[in-house]
Length: 345
Image 1: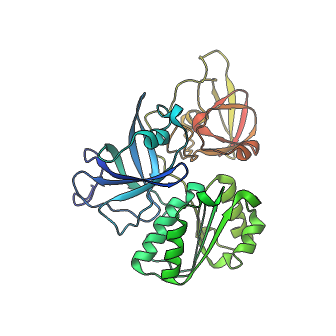
Image 2: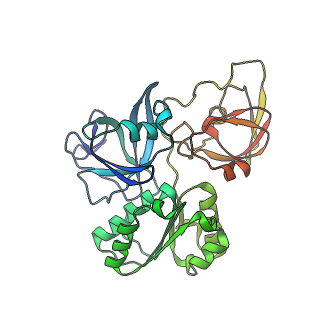
Image 3: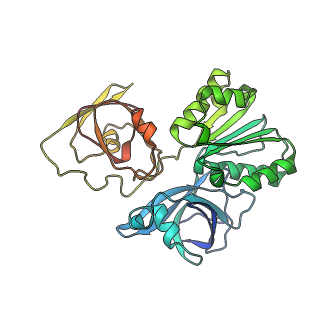
C-alpha cells in the first residue's frame, strides 16, 4: 500500500512550476504535486508522465534530474526528439512547444533500479553522453547535498561544447567536494572506444560505474570495465523498467495480409509467426519473452535488441542511432517484420 504521506500519482496531478532552457533543444521542467505532498525517490530514478497528444494521452518515462533531498519538487531535463511539425506525435516535441508553468499532467510515481540509494562505499565513475547526463546530475546533486567526499570521476560526451549539459554546476560541485575528476568530451574527435575509456580512467576496475547514453557508447564503457577486471555487479547502465503502455500495439504498419514470417528469438530458440502489421515487441510478448520497454513509440530506446538476420521496417523517433542500426540493432516496439527474422534477446 502506498504511503499516504508521500506523493503517489493517480488523481494527485503534477503541476508545472517553471520551464528553463538549458542547451539547444534541451529544457528543464519543474513539477510539484498539486496536493503539496513530498516526493520520495532515489538519485537516478524516473517518473512517468501522461501527455495529451492529439491522438490521446500517451505515457512517457523521464529521468529526474534533481536531488532526492529536494522533496518539494522535481526537475526533468528533457531533450526534444522532434520539431514543431511533430508536436502532435512526439511527446518531447509537444512538451517543448506547449508545456508551460501552471499546466498539470497525470503521472506515475518514481521508479527504476538505476539509482544510487546510499552514500557510495567505493569510488564512482559517472559517465554519460547527450541527455544521459540527467541521472548523473541527480547523483551529483545528491552527493553535494549530503557532503559526501567519495572520489568521483565524472565524464560526459556531447556533440559540441554548447551541448555539454550542466557543465558549470558540475564543475562547481567538483570544486566544493574536492575529490572529483571531471572530463568533458565532444564527438568532434570521434566517439571514445573501450581503449579510450581505459586510458581515461586507469583505475576503472575499482570504481562503481553508472553509465547512461546511446547503446554503442554504453557498450564501449562496459567493455572497458570488463577488460579492466571490474566486477559486473559494479557496472550499472540506464534502462527503464517495463510498465503497461496503452499503445503497446501501435497503428499497423501495413494492412493485415496472409503473409506470415517466422521470428526466432535466441538464445532461447523459441519461435513464433507474425504478420507485417505486428511489432517484434508484441510477437515476443505472445511467447512470454520479456523485452523491457518504456515509451512503446521508438523514443526512449529501452527495447533495443539485436537482429542477426532478416529485414524489418522500423518507425523510430530518435531512440536509436544510425550506427547502431547499421550494427544490426532495432527497437522492438516500432519494428515490423518484412522477412523471417533471427533476434537476440
